[in-house]
Length: 52
Image (cartoon, rainbow, N blue to C red; front, side, top):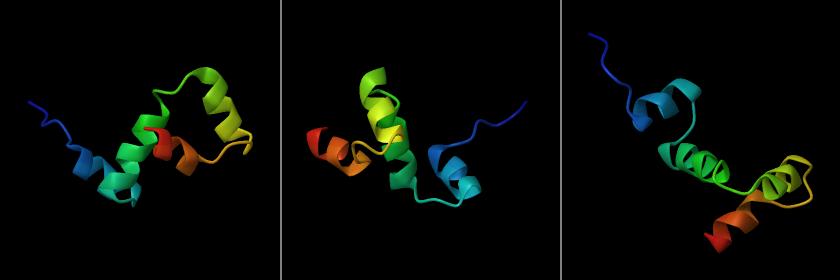
């Protein structure tokens, strides 16, 4: 039986902080238009964190 990975495990494997992984996951909940704006650097992800 395979043990499920925790968010801490995944963050460690990616070399990022657990909070950063959480922030990335929050970005996935945005409407596609906002995701596109962040990807195109028309909007900063930190602005979105302010709204959440």
